[in-house]
Length: 308
Length: 237
Image (cartoon, rainbow over the protein chains, first blue to last red):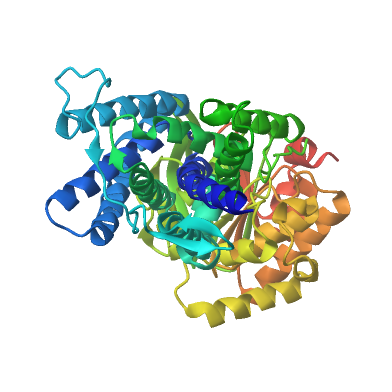
């Protein structure tokens, strides 16, 4: 029972990071139909920025909010300056451009913070110690039903849950949320009711990048350090969570993100010889494969039906 | 009084010019119908007026040029379009569709809620389905929703792009009755493009005939049906 509780909380706190990245992917996909390959790297850039703020003596709690603001700007500028002009000419090219952005941001991080010589190879980058948002000393735990639960894990889960509730309040009860849902449902009609779709898309990319920034900071805190490769696997899990959740469903992305973290940790914990730390990714992907075989549009995605 | 006036209006897509310079006018309180076959440029005309595609020529609304105005500015000014194929927001509820229709309004939640209640009383089917997703409605219900959503912005001029498309004849007639009623009771001016000439002519104050991007004839419904060649080509009797 104690072990189960520990694995549950650890799984959920890891999953919350995937949930954040998946949320970002879904918000952008709903708005513009693009898969933002640079979602993880935008988050990493903001994470380094938060580290930098910390170096300048700003407390981590304030630095993370500022880092999210920087993330918002990065996302918004990316949409206006890069994605919009290119998607007018070729929507497909945007995918390639986001891969380029992935490279560019990682290169930039390496040049500024990663201690890389130019041209950098991305290998053997410097690990920088990263502060946690929550108490994370080995003695910082609470005992629940006999299990020692890390305060950091609980804090992360609570923070992500809070953010998710806030986001859904924005989606469902604000003008911006209504505009975002309208643009996602039918961009042309959104224009015809007078919504400035350009601004909505700009805000969507900004929000996605700000959410990702928080994901990066949380994950760097859990891992106690930040390095150039920090977000590679997280992005893969995040994209997997977005797929599992249904790609156009923010709620699905969050649930799927938490689920993937949970499945991984349970599998690794209960079958240490069979699965263990090395193969826990495989189990998560097997589950995803299984779900997609029976529900191709994901757990909560809308399968689009064309009326002929 | 002239509400909408276009002169030498041209528009198209990329290199292809669809409208070859048309003159068009809608006076206050009129229902103006533009008839044309597939590919004549009906939808392009709607898009050019709504500003969703680039256009050249003079185009004025209430005496002010809207040639350079963006779509949201045009909606704010009082022109709203019901797009072809309804164009509702399928994943949103009927109620949220109507709320989105009021996006440009700044007169407060109370006034908007009152308007939603008003259109529910005009279209009771929509009230029954208020919390359903718009995508689950029938074609006729979606067309009603599309019209009600457009009216939520309190327009002066309603643009209708082939409201009869894909609807059963009885429902089409109902739709035209609604448009006529809105025109009479609310003083709403309407610019409507159609292939379905017979029904559209019944409610039209004036009619334009559009052929491959050029207006070839115009006049009252009576004048046009009196012309033998037009009657044969468009009305089929």
